[in-house]
Amino acid sequence: MLVTRGYKFKRQNLKYYLAIDAGTSVIKTVIFNSNFKQINSYSIKNPVVTDKHGKSEIEMEKFWLLTAKCIKLLIKKSKIQSQSIVGLGITGNMVGFWSINNKNKPVRNAILWNDTRSQKIFTDKKIFDQIYKITGSIVQYGCTVPILKWMTKFEKENLKKIKYILTCKDWLRFKLTGNINNDETEVSVYPGDIKNKKLSKKIFKIFKLSCKYFKLFPEIKKSNELGGYITKSASKLTTLKINTPVIIGCGDVIASILGAGGINHNKKISIIGTTCHNIIVKNTSKISKDGSGLFFASLNNTWLETKINVAGTTNFDWVIDNFYKNSKNYTDKIKIINNFEKKYLTFKYPENSLIFLPYINYGGSISPFVNLNSKAEIFGILPHHNNFDIMTACYEGLALSIKDCYANKIKTKDSLYLAGGASKSKILPQLISNVLNIKVKILSNSELGALGIAFLIDSYLHKKDLKKLINNHQNIGHIYTPQRKQSKYLNNKYQKYKKLRESLNNIW
Image (cartoon, rainbow, N blue to C red; front, side):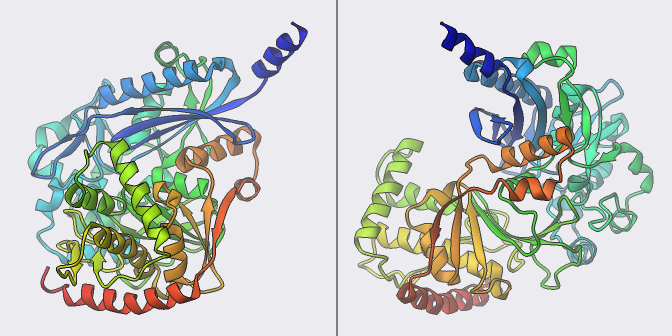
């Protein structure tokens, strides 16, 4: 009995951090202890309203209630007392348009980052180059400022009702604390002033927007500053303790990179999930001259030069859906992937004549080249080719696309840190190591965005240096080294891959 009581006493005095990772279609909540060990997680699917015309929206109140439910069920599942949770933070899908009125109620559904309705206002294509020169990013249709311009033309009555324009995490933080703010990481990619991390008059001028709309954007704070405290009403819905501190938080790309250890200059990180982010951490806001990709402001005077292939593992999904006969639920897909990888390994990294360009999405490519009409391609099909050959080419294609994104900015002395769902593959990390001819290190933490937020919570609560904190908690799993024969084969294939995609640029 004494042992049991002692254990309970110890458990009750442990301190925990709760991180919310509000994705586009899935809301996750994760609890870490103060040593950043993941204790438990809970996720809920969030219904996104879409149509064939590019609409992508979320019902804001429903989104908040689902998030509150996710928090409540996580605490219940973890069997942790609410008073043991000493800090909370939020990351979420970035930019978009989350508007509230004078009564702090939603004016309309939130418009998400992947919505394409603002395409109508891009009548002058020079606008992309003009914005890139200021921001280092290829502006996307779902960014906040383009949607604001769209509102001035197509939803004038709704625009009149708006008190504040928020983003996903700002809305959730407001519902938890009653306070309204934004953070530097999101304002920079509205698009905004990437160097000074604030709204940009130059950007508003390019979009022919009046600066009177600046008043619709809330006060900007740093990501690891205090955002407020849990209110009585939020406590009732979530079971969180009233007055638990909530930090400001940051966008999901930044949170994931912080969780991946991306705080040191020139560190290379690829996160492969539905999309594939290939990132170089910079200690300067100097904009790349290659005219492609995205550029994010992060913390501690760092910026993230990002080459993104919008289609990552969705390429695998497409091959499975079209070339494999089994049922297509999640469990069956995992079984198909596992069987393929097992067979592939028995053949010891077989060579393949097919070339797969992995751009399978409707929005085209923004890096390492810009063509909003680009498409996926399978080149070189012959009668003997089968689903195994096509899946092999797909894996190789994704690895080759990563080499294409880093180009000459990655050297043989570098290491690439790999995360995301695809980093668990038995063969993809080795293919990436072979094609880049460098070591590939697998990050062992599975919830990087939530972990990045846990770092920010700890930094705020204990006034710790964020860089030291992150560097002291970098967990590496397996390390892959290049295989000489396969490196030679894949680098020869890369030359063909690049020529193929360049030859199609004017055809797409």
